[in-house]
Image (cartoon, rainbow, N blue to C red; front, side, top):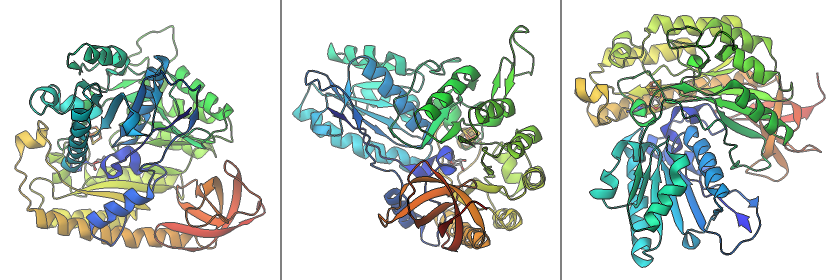
Length: 508
Ligand code: 5AD
Ligand code: SF4
């Protein structure tokens, strides 16, 4: 029996994705066209094959994921929980007894995509009333029972902290009831669940180190859908990374909404909770993971400018296997807009953090997220975002038009008053600028020799391999005798704004 996961990634819609191994969002094209291209080139629809015992009696689960990398990681947890209950996952939706959609709410269009998909499933359900259709993740948490009662699109609703309850919820549906669990937890981290990897035999894996967010950025729905911030036991993180390394993985990305506020055995006020136990902050956790093996690359996402401390930068500089790459969302280059966004820092503070990165880790790649057309954004404020981009010279960026989300602070406090066409024009201006900066960043690498971790065959040719530099730039080169998982040194010979081309050379 072959087990598949079908993945659909609205990958423009969350910050984790931004710093991960996916194509750059930076183009002179119009955003919509770019979105299509991005979806094309990402792991959208990529399938997983996990060999399993063939059991034709087993219930079949079809699991589709949208949104941020955290959602994709959560789907691995869901798969693990349900496979322990005897479920086999299927890629063929028509074979499924249970269809689950792991969803995203960060922008309106992410939700619309899921609604369209649910409408398709409704037709399937009319044909097969036994079919269970469930919704997981942020949209489930945001819309709760509405999806059952008013929209009547699903039988089951489970929020991000309710996945252990899924077997019961599915059973409840089996007895003719609608099932819902959207309780948010203060301590659920799924620490003991060993995720079924979507990318079996892969090179790069994501490891969730914390859940939720306490920041309350005024535009963001995440604190409402994912609940309070909580960190996972560091020992379980390190053993998961060790296990991944033993299975052949060569890169881990530590995931959290705000990794800089990771803390174990330390209260929100900074007090030690249990004097008899050690404490761990993010810098220490990264060091523990880096020490698993010098051959294991360590990445992380996402950092927050208000919390990113020099000790994190110093640990990055100390270990060669911690990749010199930081995703540091700025959102806006104007202090007043940042204040309205409730980001907790000013333009000057952000630029000082950038200076610290450049001082402590020379050559470190930096990427960002930007929102255009936030409530009340004036032309001058927008110009400050453009000027900040010139100062920082990001290697790449993820750029979005502001999308008002229900119940957020911004929705309650401010008018969404920047006209759609102005938001779009401003977005195009920052995309144009980023395109130039990304190209310049790649051009600076031409002529250098880079250590590359091979991820697999290049999409365009079987004779070429692709992999990433520590700074997260994608490199394509003739394969010679190399294979995925190996580290090679590559001389960069040419580039586009998205990809470097090169050839393998002997270790310098
Ligand atoms: N509208 C537009 N972009 C948003 N983001 C988060 N919420 C919104 C919103 N309401 C962006 C931010 C964040 C990234 C993951 O998504 O830039 O860093
Ligand atoms: Fe949302 Fe801000 Fe938390 Fe990021 S830090 S998840 S933008 S509230």
